[in-house]
Image 1 (cartoon, rainbow, N blue to C red):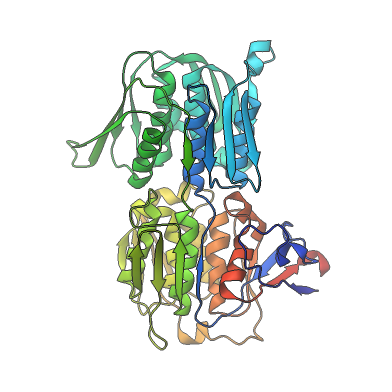
Image 2: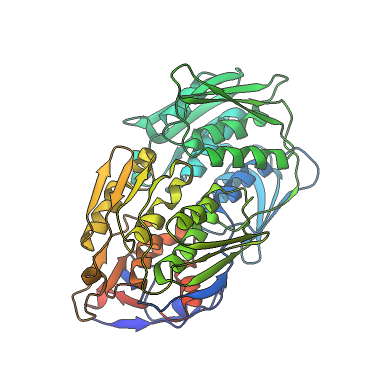
Length: 493
């Protein structure tokens, strides 16, 4: 058995970070990482660009109409964005990724690269486990027309997409079908665009269905507005507002009309005018979901961390986590260009809270780790849809927190996390390590790693899965806390 340390990188985009220089192969699924206990963390960091904004902007840029290319600045370079770029290139778009991957130039479509045009069957697009990519592309390509088959890793073929394909089936001039049980991918799209302009979609599983349909509206435009009605509850509403804003930045005209359904549930009608996207230069905010781990670092250690590049009026709803942390007792400073969280003074504990996180569900895992160090239970509500993410982010999260000794109750719409005792927190450094599984879920790895800031011996399996949205996460965390992690490769046992 061997262990290797890597020195702090101090740079979030360094290609020669100490983590990469280490003799440990950090990309190996046999690797574990251990974040070591830290004194109060004080520092500042700017996370990479938003995945949500990058993939939305890529769709709008690709289907823009104009002579000049669209250029995205501050884009995220990660597995999720790379599979979107690769799929668009495969079906004909001229896309240049320059420098460190943060600038993407999206030119026009180079002829018809669709395999079906050559009589060779559908264009086979591999989407890995990127929910935004498969949902946004399914809608966009169905509106544009052609023959495509979108597939991914086994977990992707367990993630529902039937609500989206059902909505598209009502308007497509052709056919769209799912190939796995329960309305799950692979998805086969074969048609000549949309010949209808009105559709309904359920909103209680993923807001990405609605976002995908919205972004496809200008692509399918033929003189009539596209009207989308949302039935029942809409989860993660801030992401829909984000979609509308990105579309508007690329020249689309979108109207969001809230109403009240007869059942009493919130309802929404979206009207997209028949106006084409135009190519623009577009600046992408830092990723607010990624920022949540650094704000949590301050809350867990009693430190003070500033995230640069995000403001209270950011497009991403996940900046709302700072308000949740404020309810737990943290001090929050807000200004144009940065958001700062300061934990409670030494000797004090955070306050357990009851909170609906429907609007910021991607930060549930982050909050759950913070809740371990509160003075009472924290009840998370409104996130039943989290069971259908990259993994079951309720059941699997509860399983890993219980390995730490925490009492966790699962509910239909969320969970209750009871804090750890002082004895559980102050475990001996000589105690056997606790290995936490990540289920190939980037957010499990990034959030659970923070437990190590207070408790020694917490080993995170398969840390390389953070490449999905944040390849340099552990190097950036090292730079912020000012000390190295411990890396271990099981193959050396």
